[in-house]
Each structure stands twice: as structure tokens, then as C-alpha cells.
Image (cartoon, rainbow, N blue to C red; front, side, top):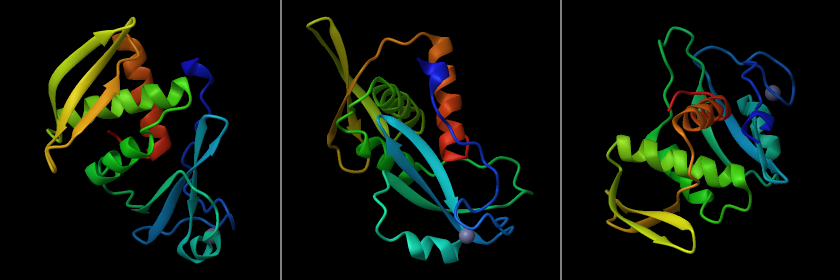
Length: 162
Ligand SMILES: [Zn+2]
């Protein structure tokens, strides 16, 4: 169920010490996983150093800039997140992976080279611009509205527009 996804909203505060994240100072965002769900936490630089051993699904360095019109997801992070979802063990992860592939195609990082059908499933085959390697993505068969919804969920999770 898309509407049951648990997404942490940006509070612009450190999840660990609760202090407000300073403008234009780097901070860290990390996704943690709980039974197929993903949630984001933000950490100030000092607290990030204390999280060394936590098994994050993925993490990145961010910067709070309230004057920027729109924060967009870095392409490298998008690719890393896509690759971390290589063996999706839940429907949501499968959906996230598919939507990320569509956005990577829009950014011309992925090129659609074929579609495979069989066993009632459809797989999209992409070629990666950087390496030429193949990326195979199962099409979860979403309609426009569900894709839009998943994009919004990803925007909330990554705290930036796709
Ligand atoms: Zn902190």
C-alpha cells in the first residue's frame, strides 16, 4: 500500500541531539531499514561521527540552503540508491527501484535497450551511460498516479526533488 509508507519529513534538526541543522553547513542524511520500510534520519556533523557502526541502507552528505529554490537529488546518489535496491525484498523497494530507473532514464544516465516479457512479468533492460553495463528492472505495472505518488515518497525520503 503506497499510502502506508512511512516517510520521515524534513525537520531540519539533528535526529540525534535535536539541534537545528545550521544553514550552509554540511550534515548527513541516512536511510535505515525496518522490515522493508525505509526512513530518513538527519545528523549534524558531530553526531554523525558517533554513528559509525549503525548499519544504514545508504547515506549521503547534504547541505541546508534555504535560499536555494529547489534542492534536487544528486545523480550519483540516485544511482547508489538504485544499486542498493538491486535485490528488492519488498514491494515498496521494487517500486522505488522502478521509479528511480525512470528518473535515471530522464537524466540520460540510463538508456532503455529492451523489454523482456515472460511468466506474467515484464522487465525493462537499461544500458548505463557510465559503464555500458546492463541494469534489469522489473516493471511493477503502476499507473501514472501511482508513479507520481511514489515520486513524492522518494522526494520526501531523499529530502530533495528527483
Ligand atoms: Zn546532532
